[in-house]
Image 1 (cartoon, helix red, strand yellow):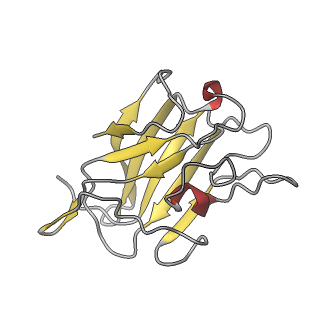
Image 2: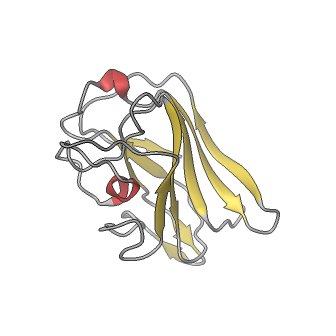
Image 3: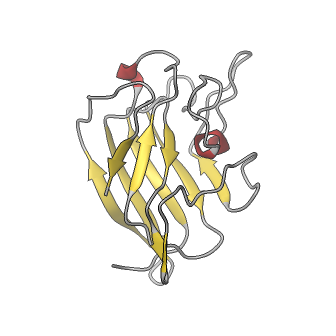
Length: 156
């Protein structure tokens, strides 16, 4: 398994809203069984950095990147979504130190802002190999349509 550091990116196709949670991962000799991304309170706090290709904002919702990593999935105001009219995009979390990821989870907000039909159907989960400067695809999902509100999808 390659050791990679940096942005773990979801290049999500047809995306509007989702929440990411990374679980059961390890770095060095440590085995993680919980989310290794801290509960974010801004794009850079408490550690690491959340970013995205775009985000949705209006008078009712501010769907900033860090909200995908705030560990809250029971409200429609705690999520990341792409800008209006944008159906593709990416979401990233950069760890402050190297991690080796073996599993991740993704969950819709609860309730879904519009409908489960607006959730991602196709995406890649990627990491930056700092030795080569190239993105490494760790997982690819296609034609995912069996979403349930608030239910985590565990992927390896």
